[in-house]
Amino acid sequence: MKFSYTLILLLFFKVSFAFDVIDDVANYCKNADVKAISGLFSSTVELSVLDQDDIYSASQASLILKDFFAKHPPIGVKVIHKVVSNANYKFGVMLLATSKGNFRISYELKNASGNFTISEIRIEENKD
Image 1 (cartoon, rainbow, N blue to C red):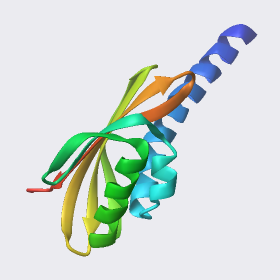
Image 2 (cartoon, one colour; image 1 turned 90 degrees about the vertical axis):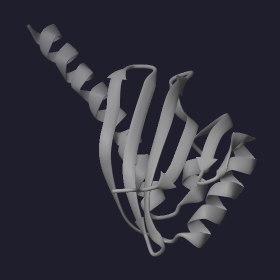
Image 3 (spheres, helix red, strand yellow; image 1 turned 120 degrees about the horizontal axis):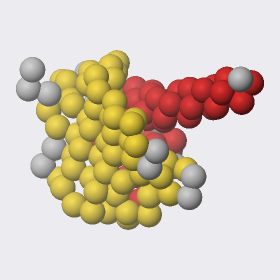
Image 4 (tube, rainbow, N blue to C red; image 1 turned 60 degrees about the vertical axis):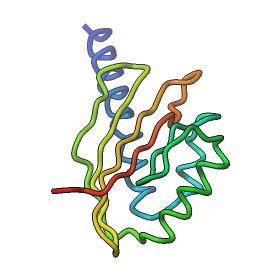
């Protein structure tokens, strides 16, 4: 019986951690903390920012993201969708309110040796 409770607690902790990764990225975006975001980048990142879309090295992606946040200072963020059902893959979608409009940001994280890294980010104007 004690083993069952321990197993349930561990599963709950693992699911809670998965949500934290999604929420952490959202909080980093809310604070325009490019350093923290880029610390989660995989070695290459598929990055789409408005009309700019390509696969970049982590350092290039960081510069592009820094430029985006400089031009669009964040005001608030709301996570609207999370996929955390797979132990090796996480996906989040947030709405980012900025001083120059609202944006929809989707991001994909993959498990790399026990740590989740961002492999893709898409930033587009929110049409709602």
